[in-house]
Amino acid sequence: MTQCFPRLLSLLGLLLFGFVWQIVKFTNPYWVLIPDTFSLGNITGIPRVVMPTDSDTYESQDQLSEQSIKTRVTHVEAVCTRMPELSRDCDKKYRFMLADEKYHVIYSEIPKVASTNWVIFMATLDGRVTVDMDSYDQKLAVVTNRPSLARIGLRYLSDLSYSVKDSYIKNYSKFVFVRHPYTRLVSAWIDKLNPGVDWYHRQYGRNILRLLRKNATTSVIKSGSGVTFPEFVRYLIYLSKYQGVGFDEHWVPYYKLACPCTVQYDVIGKIETLSEDAAYVMTHSFRLPHNASFPSGSQSHVTGSTRHVVRSYMKQLTGDEQDALYTIYEWDFLLFNYTREGFVY
Image 1 (cartoon, rainbow, N blue to C red):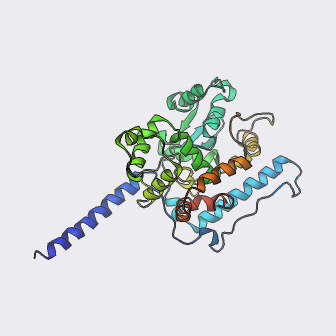
Image 2: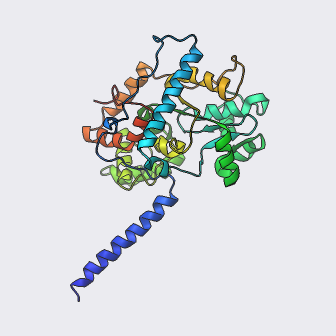
Image 3: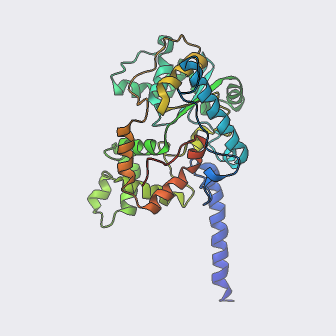
């Protein structure tokens, strides 16, 4: 009987872990679905797509943008058809989807992808809000005040009833912007952790340093500042072992926030072609005149220097760490047709 007791405890422990895991999985919106070890880019029927370029024959930039956007939308649909699990494992509360009730447009807000400027653009349409574009504090005050946004007809879907939410998703024009996953990741690390801001130092920096920095002093851990890029990546890899529980919205994968396999987007734009894609959204989704302008201050394309900076940080990782990091974001690479080429060693 005494020999069976340890086995019984082990069995009860496994059952308890399974129960707790199911609770975590369905209550935490940002647990991350880790792909299998095979390369998604090699799955039969989902090849990398070739985007239209200026060398093709188009009568206008608008026509080129339209064809590029259609190609992206079609590609996402093809991936989603073959990966039904992606539609099950997204944040269906749509916490970051902002509906403009005047223009009947939904913007899927992804942090670190020009999201602040898109919310500012929507808030200032028709003079609904006046913002000094050179004042970061003013812009931040606008985008973080949900009650004020709601009063001018900008409402997050998570604040709406299910019936209204479903109606908006069905009838409104919907758009989302993405960027290369690695440029977003480096941008998030710099902005939030190095040098970063105090809240992120307390919320994430302390845990990262406590877990991953050898011989870290008590004062260093308490400050939570100075997290290196390799330490940040190792923390994400560590979290991925627990299906990404604890991922912040600034580095959670796109498929979790934007739900591209659940929400059928009319426009999928990219930071790499921000000027052209933003112009297309303004004229086709918001139906504004062609002279409408998008707020300045966002990187409109990935420059050689941007790629060089990202590569310099990726170079600090071991080959195994680069592969593990890619695995975390592999769904995003496939869905939005990005590759690691030029960013890793």
